[in-house]
Length: 390
Image (spheres, rainbow, N blue to C red):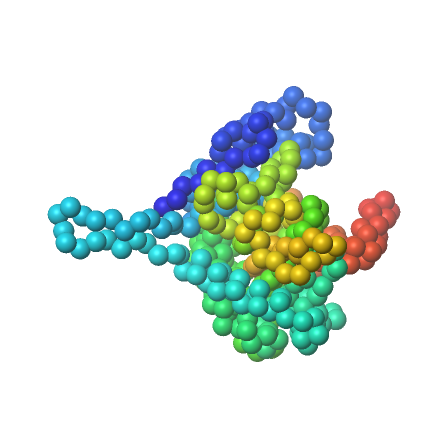
């Protein structure tokens, strides 16, 4: 296995994420108290029992804590190695192949690039549906993307690879929720603990009627000039898995933005990034925090797909795949059943509330980063005004 130890880009950070956490926790005592630092201090002073050790699959031991403390971590896939010849045997041992998830996302990348390379007039037949997150959208100057929620409204070229990837990553996310349940002292059965909120969401629906809140998004970000192409935010669901064909994702490490994908590439590794969402933050009574992140274009042309040109500059793109597992909308939330010594008493108990209602409550407090900038700004102002009234 290729062991990739992540390290932030500045000299202030240590050579692994685990060391980075310790450094941040000690560093914040010396600096003026900001909102982020205050939240960290509250977490450090938390008197609840420690989480039970329950390693998340495909996450290296030194990267386990970041998911629980910062809301993000890196999924590391087994690496390939040259064929080895046994001196005592005439046969050679074949190298391990790519992980099934890797094969699935590589196939989906290829299909996604073929879709995005179509003329806009052709992609328009899959345009965004009003009142829905589904379909293709384009935000000039930033990105274009297509959101898939069922095979019924999915381009033919994407159907098979999207369905395969959804199935594999859905299983992985469900397994991860089982491990998190164990860490919190909750049962980890398929319909118990936090896994009860998965329901049918781990499989891509075939028909419109089977749609769930969960979705799969394919992005193509503009990358021919340095800029932020997706504003800082945290996802609204349970767990998100992000994989890019070139670095661009940055995560909030409690003090600064950490270029997690570039660091994986610098270390010669291959992987994806897992992020905790706001629903899971609430359902764990804030023992886990939603992972803040953004997407940046670095203007690095290496390994980026290209076409045409803008003012003499060749167009370069970053493609990414984002799987967002959201809690099944009809599942009833009972905070008493989710309460343990480790979660502590819920600050805001919930009973008789569906996961769908919780999602809408969370969504109403956030602006949508995947709309035109003018609309984002209007949503941001409206939220600020609402806070002032309260």
